[in-house]
Amino acid sequence: MKLELNLALKNLFGARLRTLLNVLVLSFSFVIIIFLNSIMDGWDQQAQKDSIEWEFGNGHLINENFDPLDPYTILDGHGKIPEKSVGLTPILDRQASIYPQGRMISIILKGINAEQTILKLPTKILKESKEEFPVIIGKRLAESAKLNKGDRVQVRWRDSKGTYDANTLSIVEVFDSNVPNIDNGKIWIDINKLWEMTTLDNEASYFIVDDQFKNPELSSWNFKSQFALLKSLKDLINQKKTSQSIVYGLLLAIALLAIFDTQILSIFRRQKEIGTYIALGMTRMRVVRLFTIEGSVYSILALIVGSIYGVPFFIYMSKAGFPIPPADQKLGIALADVIYPVYGIRLVLITILTVIICATIVSYLPARKIAKLNPVLALKGKKQ
Amino acid sequence: MKKESIIQVKNASKSYPIAGKEFMALKQINLSLNKGEFAGIVGPSGSGKTTLLNIIGSLDKPSQGDAFVLNKNIKALSHKDAASLRNYHIGFIFQVFNLLPVYTVFENVEFALLLQRNSANERKDAVMRALSWVGLTDHAHKRPDKLSGGESQRVAIARAMVKTPKIVLADEPTANLDSENAHEILKTMKKLNHELGTTFLFSTHDEKVMGYLDRIIHLRDGKIEKDEKNKS
View: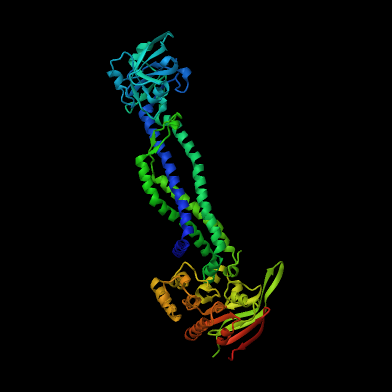
C-alpha cells in the first residue's frame, strides 16, 4: 500500500494542472459543505439558545384547556395558580385589539410577572415605569404597527364577564429578540395589571418553569418539557438540513464527476504506462489499487488545499457571522440577524470521511477496468 | 557439461480474432533456450516475433501447446504468479523505452526493486550499480523527457537488469535509435550477458542487432523457418 501511495503521489504531482484543477474543485466542495453545515449548526444552536432564553425557560406548564397554537382556547384556557407552586412564572394570555393611527390590529396581551428573571424579556421596566399602563413590545410588532418607544396606543379588551373595556397603553420599551413567537402580535404587560383589567385574579394560561420546579404532575395543568418545546424547532432545522443536503450532493457530484472523468481519461490515456507496470511485475490488482489510491489522494490533497484557504475563511466567518437578509427573519422562526457558524468535530469528520469514501468509490469504479486489460495491447498503447 | 534449458516452447500456437476471423500469429512453435544465450527472433513485421516474446514473458498465453519459463508453465500461471515471475526473473526492454514519465531515471530503475520490497540501501546500491553498467550514473536525477533516445534505452536496460533477472526480453530495442546508439546499446547488453550470465532474447529485424546475436531464430508467418548459430 505504501508503494502505491508513493507512486500515486508521484503520478499526481507529475500531472500538475490536471491534479490542481481536480483538487481545487474538490476542495471547494469541502469548504462549502462544511461551511453550509456549520451555518445550519450555528442556526440550530442559536435558535435553541434564544428560544430557551426568550420563550421556553426550562419548560411550560400549560392549562389543560389552553393550546398555544389555537387562539380559540385563549378565552377559557386559564386557571388558578396552584398553591405552593415553586419555580413557576405565570403567563396570562388575553385577546385584545389596538388602534395605532386609526388602524385596528388584533393582538394578544401577555401578562407576566414584572420581576421575573427566567426569560430575557426586559419586564423590569414594567415595574419601574410611572405610566398607568406600561407595556413592552418586540421590534417586529413595533415595525408592523409603526409603533415606537414612548408611543401611546388605544387598546380594547374583554374582562372575565365578556364586557369590553378600553384604555391607553404606553410603550415603555421595544425589545429586540430573535424569537418571533414572543414578538409578532404580542404585547407584554405586568400580570398584576392584566389581572386587574380582566378581573382574572391569580389566573394564568401557562407557566414558564425554572430549575426550582419539581412537580410536573399538577391536576388541570400539562407539563411540556424544554425538549418537547424545542422539538418542532429541531424538526424544522432538520428538514432544512435535509433539503440542503441536495445542494451538498450536487456540489459533491460535480467534484466527484471531475475525478471520475480524470480516472476514465487516465485509464484511457495511460494504457502504455499500465502495460509497463504489469510488465515490470505489478499484479493487475495492484495497478487497480494504484489508480484507486490516485483518485482517493485527490480528496486528501483537496483537504489540505481546502484547509489552506478554508480555515482562515472559517475563522473569519465565525467572528463576522453570516448576515441573514431581513426578509428571511420574517419567516416566523427563531433566526438572528447574523448567524455565527459552529464547526463541530463531528461535522468536519463526517464531511471528510464522506468525501474521501465517495472519491475512493468513483476512483475504483473506472479502475476496475484495468483488471480486464490485455497487457500486450496496453503496452502498445492500444485503446481497449 | 549439459547446458541448463530455461525456456522451452512446445507446439505453441497463438491465434487472435481479427475482423471476426481467427488469425494464427504463431503456428506450432518449438523452441528451447539455454541459460546465458544471446539469441534473437528475426523476421519481418507480422511474423509473430513479439507474440512469441510476450508468451515467453508471461504477458500472454499460447492458445495451444505450452511454454515453460524457468520450469513454470506459462499457461497454468495465475495473474499473480505471472507477475511474480516477471518481477523477479524477467526483464523487459521495449522499442519505445516505456519509461515512466513522472519518475526520475533513478526512480524508473528502482521501480522493480520497490515491487520486491528491498530495503532502501539495497535499492540505492543496486540502482547505482545498474546505472554504472549503462554509464548513466550522472543522469540519475533527470526525468526521461530530458534524455536522448539512446540514453532512454540505456535507462530501460538498467531497469531490466537492476534486479539481475535470469532472462531479458528485448522487443526491437534498437528500432528507435540511430546507428551509433544502437551499437552502444548492443555492446552494453552483450557485456552484461557475458558478465552476469543473463539470457537475452531479442525480437528484431535490424541487421545491426543480428550481428551481435549468437543464435538467430528466423520466424516467418508464425513458423520457425530456420534456427541457426550466428557465424558472423
